[in-house]
Image 1 (cartoon, rainbow, N blue to C red):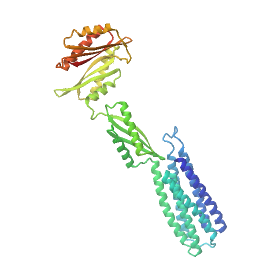
Image 2: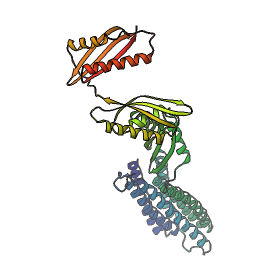
Image 3: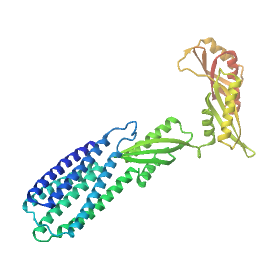
Image 4: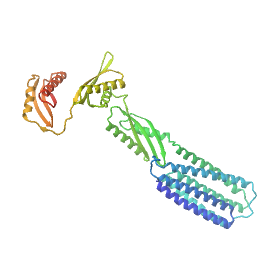
Amino acid sequence: MFVQRTRVLQISLLAIFSAFVVELVFGLVSNSLALITDSIHALLDSVVTLVLLLAARWAIKPPDAEHTYGHGKIESLGGLIGGIAIFLIACFFIYESINRLQSPPPSVLPGLFAIIGGLYTIGIDFFRIILLRRSIKKIGGATLKADFYHAFMDLGSTLVAIVGIILVSYGLYFGDFVAALILGILLAALSVKLVYKTALDLTDVISPDLVKKVREISMSTEGVIGADSILMRKSGDTIFADVTISLRGDTSFDKAHEISDSVESNIKNKIPNASTTIHFEPDWEDVPIDAKILEIATSVEGVKGVHNVSTHKTKGKTYSNLHVMVDREINLFSAHKISEIIEDKIQQQIPDITHATIHLEPFVTVPENFNKEDVETEEKIKTILEKYPDIKKIGRILSLKFENILKIDIDCSFDKELSIEKVHDLTSEIEHMIRMEIKNSVITIHPEPD
């Protein structure tokens, strides 16, 4: 878009400069002070358009070490300069009109030749107004708006000059000056509006409705439970937004990243020129206490895994139990140190927990690829299982070997009326007996009802 703006401003600059040359030549030939004055105004407008062109070109530059948000603000600065220039010119018109109203009529009157020069400028002004108006609707930009106001001002001042020439020819000397006064006041109002808007852009003003829209888009994204901190600013055509969203505290990092991508995509769909950065924070308010404990324990250095997290209340007090897996090679002192850290963190972050009981377990990494072990090992396991009368049926026994680790999977059936607590105790005892017999084994027993 910046490239398109520079092209439009280049065309506008050539057009208004040609109007300056024509008006100056025709004004000097016809001895028209009004036309010569208007040509000087066209020259000044050419200079202002050149400033706007340079501002638009500088705004194209990509972000660098000193301008991490890019150079879009330069365009707003160019619009501000253009607006101030319009205001000064309008003040000059007002001053000149009042001054001429108090002066005697001119002795030399301009003629048809001066009117022809003015008509050429009017044609140029109409061309610029149409070109700039279409470009503003299509690509926007503060510099194009500033140049559009300039073109409008040029048209008005040239019309005033021509009307003045015609009225002076009929002896109505003051008509030219009254029209110029009205034009000056109108242009002053337009320039103040432009200066005010571009000055606000430079101070990073942003529409509250736009911030509200971004918040609503964020909150409507599945998984987001809050969007409190939203920082926004505009640079050129780009709207930068830093959005902080709240997610459930037990949300995984991958899921949190997925939700953040969805928020960013939804904002981009509704606001195409937005450049969004999403930050996410955990919110534990409505998360079950077991999930909080799991998150706390998992975050402690040295913890390889956490399972069987449970909480219960007794006599108004809350207690928790959890199984924590640590490296099987570390000693008891180091493992106990990890459990103390977990207990302290739970106490600090969940004061309602009176005490946390931590069951330490060795963590064994089970490889994916195994070599099948010999039949002798499976016979040893079957011998151990046959010692337990509660086992009604021995099913599949699969032993897979990887380096010095033996992975054993056992299917066996128990009485269907047996309590799950009893089954758990039996399987734990069986696993222990097998490990006593077969070293470096990782055992999984799958109990089934008989």
